[in-house]
Length: 401
Image 1 (cartoon, rainbow, N blue to C red):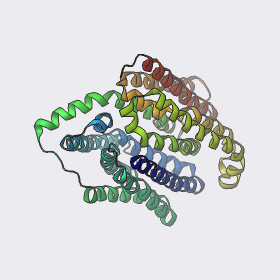
Image 2 (tube, helix red, strand yellow; image 1 turned 30 degrees about the vertical axis):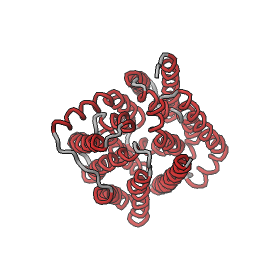
Image 3 (cartoon, one colour; image 1 turned 90 degrees about the horizontal axis):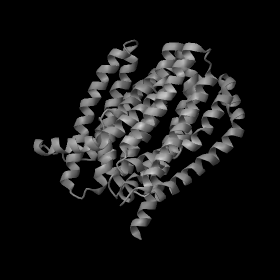
Image 4 (cartoon, rainbow, N blue to C red; image 1 turned 180 degrees about the vertical axis):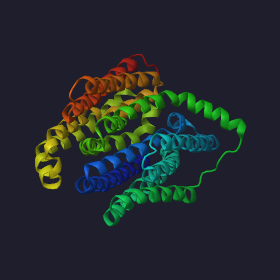
């Protein structure tokens, strides 16, 4: 009974943190959308897209930790998993940094802040993953404050006082500070045994690499298109597209936070009934918010963001697509839990390939406008959900626990 009460309290705490982070990010995004030119907003969007790529600077090891640590009772083996996660994240983060330094060589000082921020963020995230796998979520919640709430607050202050350059510098400083706090206050012993570290790496990599590839394809489809738009249509169009997609991210943060909080239960239970119940709940919550927003949107845009009044229809389409997409994170964790990572890879490969094929064909043979890109994007989100839920139901029928 006490464990149930404790779990519910932590649930409320984490959701409060998620919403505080969301509010701060909403304010930052509204201010940047309102006060920056579409070209500068495009630069910022490209920088943030680079930063997001560091979510994948672990080669699947972090996914393997999600899979195995919740059921691992040995503290020493948990620490070995953490050690492998930290080292692999550091090594691959440096590889990412070298790649981006060559790929985005223009305006390198501006984008370097996002490279470095990405390194510190991915290292701090390993601490979050380690504590997220524990039943006691106190440290997980505290680290979430350090790496989510504090950076958003610092960036808001930086932009308010020093505009775009202040935001970018604050971005770097906040994630550096977050990582240093994790190292100092959330100490986890590093395992130095090479005989153990390499087998653990192989085990985690084997369990997580397919999900990693799957998530990477999803990243390319959800964020990587900004690089295509920048190349073919310019930074101004990236800025407009980013303003539209801001509303998508606003409505999906709830579902992402919800899935992250119950991931340990998904891994332990491996129950499709449990997952569908939570998919239904989070989809209902998102649907209520979307319904209200569809009617209020013209007034909000005309009052706060009048220079984007011409894309209200596009924004409506993209926020409606968040209703089916809300359950994808939970369903992905379920497929990961039952070791159907090849299905995840196939789903993201199919949907992402179709999306980029559509963009390529449009840009080659049609006169492309923002509405056509948004419709294609919404179709990608809906297709991803449809394929994922079909896969979950299909595999659950043959699953023997």
